[in-house]
Image (cartoon, rainbow over all chains, first blue to last red; front, side, top):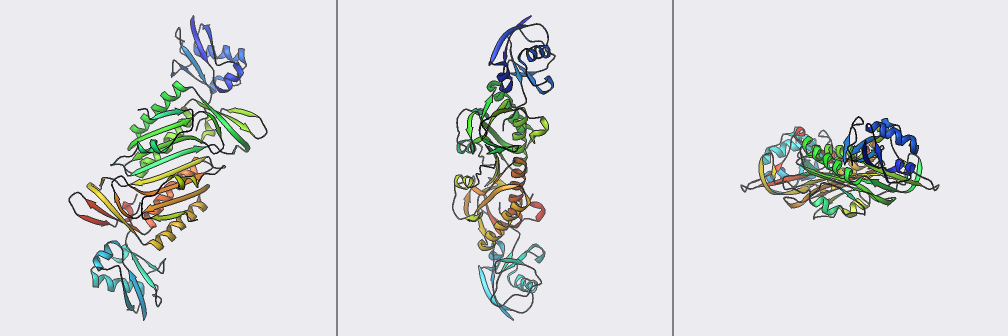
Length: 79
Length: 79
Length: 143
Length: 143
C-alpha cells in the first residue's frame, strides 16, 4: 500500500474537478489509472495516456513509491 | 556591328582592370566573351560563366543589340 | 543556463537569438509558432496553454541535448509560452546555430517536432461560437 | 513593396519579420547567414560582397515569386547584404510565414538555396595571412 499524490492536467483535470488528489493505492500504475478513470469518467483510454512519477516518465507496470507524485499525461498539444 | 557596354564583376573586373568598357562587336555573345577573355586573360572558361543583356539572363548564341548593356556573370557566391 | 524554458508571459526573441551567435557558426535557422485565427476548420479567438512545468522543462532540455548530439550544430534553444494567448501571439520559438545551413534547418525542424509530440503542454482553444476545448491530438495528427 | 532587397548597410530583422505576420499563419521559419571566422579550412578576417544590383534584385524577386507559387506559404522575404562585413555580421536573411510548419521550413530552405545558386552576388574573402580572393564556387560546392 502506497500513499500517492496524483496530478491532473487538461481534460483530465476538468473531468476530475481538481488539480490533484492524495490517495492510498495497492497495485501498479495501470491499475491506478483504471480505478481513477472509472471514478472520474476520464474519456481517454490508457493507450492514449502516459504516466510520470516524481517528474520523470515511467512504465505503466511500475508500482508507485510511497509518497510519490504521479502525473497522468494526456496527449500533448504544445507548439 | 553593334556598339555595346560590357560590365565586369568580381574576378573578371580584377582581370580586366575596369568596371566596364564600350566596344563594337560583330557576332554572338559567346564570341564576344572569347575575344575579351583572350584580351584580358580571364581565368574562367565560358562554360562557367552566364551572360545577361539589359538586366536579364540571355543565351550565349544571342547577338548583342546595338546600345545593349552586357554583363558576364561568373559563378556566384552570395549567401 | 537552461536551453529550454517555459515562459508565462510574452518574451523577446532578440536576446535568445543573440546567445546562439558564434564566430564559427555561419548558419542560423529559427522557427516560430503563432496563434492562428482558425484550427481544423473552426474560427478561433484565442487559447490557453497549460504545462506540467517540472516535467516539461526536463523533457524540453532532453530534446535540446539530443539535438546537440544528433546534428552538427553549434547551439540550440527553445522557449514555449503558457497562459492566455490571443490570435497572432507567439506560442513557441526555436533557434539553432550551426556551421552549415543543412544541419541548422534539420535540427530546428526536429526540435519543434519533438517538442510538439513529447513535451507535456496542452492547448485549450476558444472558438467564436463561445465554446472551448482541450486538444488531445492523435499521434498522426501532429505532422 | 519588394520582397527581395539588397542592403548596403546593416539592417534590422524585426520590421521585416513583422511584415510577414498573418492572422491565418501559424508558422514562421527563418534563416540567417552569418560571416564565419573560417571557410574551407582557412581563417578569415572578413569579406566584401558585391552585386550586379539590378539583376540581383530582379532575380531575387523571381525566386520569392516562384516560392509563393510552389509552396503553401502566406508570404516570404529575403534581404542580402553587400559591402564590407566583419566576422559575425549578418550576410543574408530569409523569412517565410505559412499555415503549417512543413511548408514554412521547405520554402525557407528552397529560397536560400536558390539565392545562393542564382543571384549575382560575389564574395571577396580576406584571410589572416593578408591575402584575399573572389569565390567562384563550382555548382556542386554550393550545398
